[in-house]
Image (cartoon, rainbow, N blue to C red; front, side):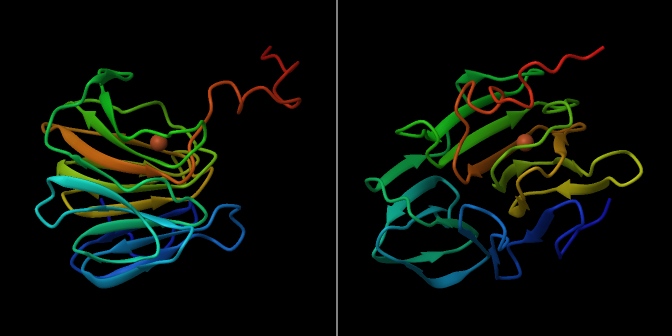
Length: 215
Ligand SMILES: [Fe+2]
C-alpha cells in the first residue's frame, strides 16, 4: 500500500487533510474544478461558481454559490459555471438507495438537472468491492468520511497501484482513470463529488458503441 502525493500516470491524486493544498483540474479537461485539501482560511467563490464543502465536525455538507468566501477544514470542491441555490444537508444518517455488490448510496445534493454536478454518499460494507474496475467520463473528487478500505488505480494488474483509504484522505480521479474501491474487515463511507454527472443512456448511445458487438 502506498500514499500517492503527486499525480500518478494512472490519473489520480491522493492526499491527506493534514497538508493543505489545492488540486486543480487538468488543463485538457473540459470542466474546470478545484479541490481544496485541509485547512483553508478563505476560499473565494466567484459569481457563477459554487463550492461543495463539509463542516469541521464532519456532520454537515454544504453547497454554496458565489460570490462568497468560505473557511474549510478538510475538503471542498469548487465547480466553475455552476451556481444553484445554497443548500445544506446533514451527513449523519445511513444510506437509502441500493447500489451494486451490496453497497448503498445516498444523494446528498442530487443533480437538479440531468448532468449537473452532485455530491453523493457511498457506503461499502466489509469484504466488498465497490464495482468492477471502471472509468467515469468526468472527474471525481472523493473525501473519505469514515472507515477504511483501498482504492485500486490503473489499467491492469501490471500498472495498477493500491492506495489505503483512511478518514480525511482525499482522492481526485481524473476522467477515464480506471479504478475501484474495496474493503477488508471494516466498512467504508466516502463522499464523492461528481464534477458534472452522468445521464442515463447518454454515454453509451454513440456511434462507436452502437453496432459494435463482442465476438
Ligand atoms: Fe468510481
